[in-house]
Each structure stands twice: as structure tokens, then as C-alpha cells.
Image (tube, rainbow, N blue to C red; front, side):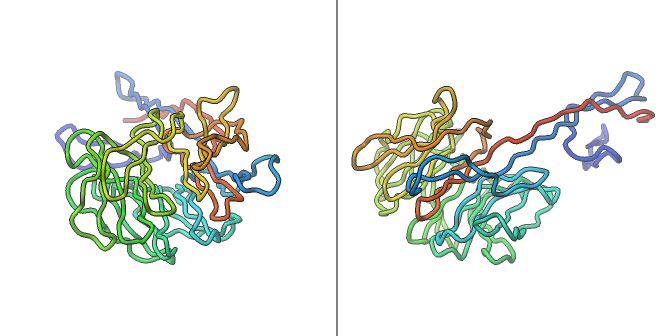
Amino acid sequence: MEVPISGGEPEPLAGIGQDAHRPAVSPRGKLLAYTQWFTNVNIWRAKGPRAPAQGGSPVELISSPRTQMEGQFSPDGKRVAFWSNRSGTPEIWVCNSDGSSPVQLTSFGGPSNGTPQWSPDGRWIAFDSSVSGRAGVFVVSAEGGEPRRVSEGNSEDMVPSWSRDGKWIYFCSIRSGDLLQLWKVPAGGGQPVQLTQNGGFESKESKDGKWLYYSKSLDEGLWKMPIQGGAGTLALDRKIGRFWDLTDQGICFIDLAAKPHPTLGLYNFDTQRVTTFGTIDKPLVISDGALSVSPDGQWVLYPQVDHVESHIMLVENFR
């Protein structure tokens, strides 16, 4: 992009294309050099904690020449919501659970969109978007249509999830200060309610609706607090980043600190022990990763880096 020294609206540079980073102009202004960086990230499927036979290699499920991440199974297990920039900009998509028939749901055409989460009845998908400059929580019909903003205000609201009764949407925000805290807002819109005082990032209600599990950062493990409010306690002391999901049995997660490769594990609520059921031997997207377990526990989804390349490009007669 370029912008006049005197100020004004940024405009794209003609002929540069996508995936351009770190531009540098020669002192005389005749040459422009930049790095063209390309990363291909796809959503992979591996056997889950309730698969009838453990073992077997993960398979690539949702792919394109660009990026797709944060795949989430629908409540009936028949579809997957995810975000992808395969159309040129990050948008929310849905497809069948086997990866077929992808359909684009949003068409914002530029801002970052992500963290799609199904409503319990499978009719709606909550997600975050920075279409207005600052991130906000939106809802769109799973069949398509005009997205509706749920969280109001000039704050950074992101990483939504639904309550089990579908009446509330949880999210994290800095609206109470510099530290991200957990909030909830009525699914139809309304006044947000602050839930945490000591930090909160990504949250999910337990299957029985009694507990809210949440992370504070990528390195602080997983915490839980009563749904009706109260102090949080450490539930899982593992480095899991955003790679976790809840099942009836317990917490399904990727142990990022496991050696020599990250492992798929299940923390059982009853036994309070971890069982390892898989290994991941290729790079993961740590900051924007996500894990989703199918409703029957047979499968898990996660994003994987499949290809990275970069080139130094030179534009002559730039001015």
C-alpha cells in the first residue's frame, strides 16, 4: 500500500499482488524491493479419543492453495465451519464433514475474520471480525445471509463461543482495561457482562453446562470457573495454546511441549489422568490454531502448515 506524505487514504500499489511484505525503496526511488512470503495451511483430520481403533495417519481434509484454519464440527457432526482466504480475503466458510462442497458465508472483502463457532442448534455461526476497524463479535446464519453484530462498542471483542442453551455468547475483550478478560453477551444483543478479573482469552462451556473452561494465554494451561461466577482454578497444567476442546469424557488437547513431537491427549474428568491417542509430526499454527472434536469423539480437526516459501522481488522503474 502507499499513502501520500500529506495524509490520505492508502491505495494498493499496482502490479505487486498478494503476500507482499517488508518493502524497501532505493535512495533514488527507482527500485522497489519486497519479500513475497507464501504459507499454505490446511485443516487435517486425525482419529479422536473414541475412535474404535487407534493408530493410522492423519489425512488432509480441507485444503486449497492458500490458508484454511479453525475448523469446527457442527453439533450434528455433518458440517464443518472454518475460515479461509482462498477467495482473496479471510472469510467464513462451511463444508460437509468430509471436506466437500465448500460454501462461502461472508464477503467482507478485506478485514480479518475468524474463530467460527456453531450455535448449539446448528442454525448460527458466531465469529469475530475487524470490519469496522476494531474486532467485534458477529453472528451469521449457517445457511448464509447478512451477518449481524452482537457486541457493541469501540473495543476489541473476539474469540466467541456459545453457552449450551444458546442464550449467551462468550468472548474476550479489553473493554475493562488493557488485560483481556472474559465477557458474555445475550445472543440477540444487549449489555455485556464481565466474568473474569484476572485475565481470560478463549472459553467454552462444559457439556453439562456447569463450568466455563478458559485459557489466559498460549502458555498458561487451562482454567475453569463455575457458570454462575466465582474464582477460577487451574484445570489442566499443559502447554496447549488454542488446541483444546471439551467432550463428555474430558478435555481433548494437543500437548505442544511433548517431545519429540506434539501429542494428542485426553484428560479424563473421572480419573484425572491423561491418555495419549495420537502424534503430530508436522508444524502447527500456534497463535491461530484450533482443535475440534466430532460429537461422537471419532475425529479431531486441527490446522497444519504444509508448505512455506519466500522470494525477494524487485520492481524496476518504480517512480
